[in-house]
Length: 352
Image (tube, rainbow, N blue to C red; front, top):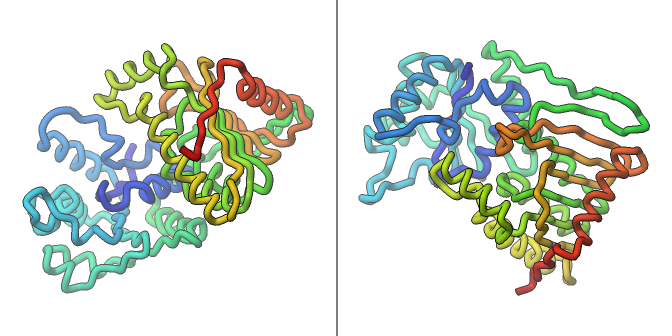
């Protein structure tokens, strides 16, 4: 059941909202959160409004993500969106205010909290009485812990997950987690603290915006980063792309995502090389394997995601594995190197 509603503008704060979502989901679970990207509606806008109202009827807390363009965003006619009574964000907030839902404005990306007069201008003066929380990039974890405490204070209980499962020290499994999406915040933390190397074997990186900043910090410190993405010309990639397009109505998670990842990795290489003053240790290759797992290897830790047949897009349970000298850790290291060195693997030049 949805208990937490996240209101945001796609054109304003989509990247940071995804990161906030991951942190909140890590504490309370995906099922406790509603944001419109997760809505399963079809049809006209009134169907969307019904879906949103239905979600808000169940929710106890609304997080309003306010970035630099939250107030100034304009529609296709040049009108400020918030001044339009039909604006989706305005409708979400007004409905939440009517239901006396606990509202927490979240100020992000260096934006300023809107003034009381601005809130009043758009008929949202009640928001001025709400205690807001600023999320700073350089204090993200600390600030999000404060938000989590505020949500708990509203009577929403965190989920209980196995996070310290130790099956066998020789095997190396140290944790079992709910799913890859929920715990990407944990992986981000390991990437930010990487000292030697990061190896990523995956079909494509669907949440690039969430890990981009952490990868940039690691690359600018000279950390070696190797990416293995699916070759978008392979029959498997084409089939998978068509399957997802039929399910979602777009190619957001298909071969276009590989090409988008490639462009981002090239930019990552360029920026890191400029900061270092010499070529960054970043490599990208396309593989032709039919993947059943996603591997994030960060120094002595591995995060292994198993893609379920029925839910392989977003519901991949993961294992955390420590130490390359353990049985499973060693196997994962060899698996990455095996795919990396295959004759069918294609080296992608990043300086072009």
